[in-house]
Length: 211
Image: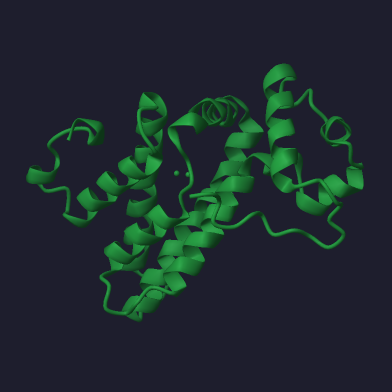
């Protein structure tokens, strides 16, 4: 389901000067697109970045994790923002604010994100890795709802809210990436407001860009 990044991927001990998780991500995305995911090795990514194989694994546990750097940073930011949400702010309003604050994608980011989406939809290993990352995103919201309502995280309402929010944000992301006419926040805001309103008829009046 993506301001400058709220938080860079947390650096691991021994981070080499002049190299970042984001740089490795950009290089890996280019190589995956040019020569294929399975054909690209960790050694090739590291060499293109001018670092060692060991350095690569200081940032990422597996080759497939490279494409999730920005997403995972967003999850961390949402979790932290929800932990700071005032008690008097309604649940879905707090979630909407956190999601919008954590998001940093602009219309100019669409070409890169389309390459990422193409890889995730065509490479089975990457599609399988998506489950864990989406679950982490969902759990950030579920945990907040559980705390706010005093219920267990596996109770109906925390689960329902977490999954509904994730589905809404993914729909906003897909529509935004197809149109590329505005920042993602416009679509996230419209989708989450509609969700909070119960998708009542009066809010389902048109695409965000047409309002």
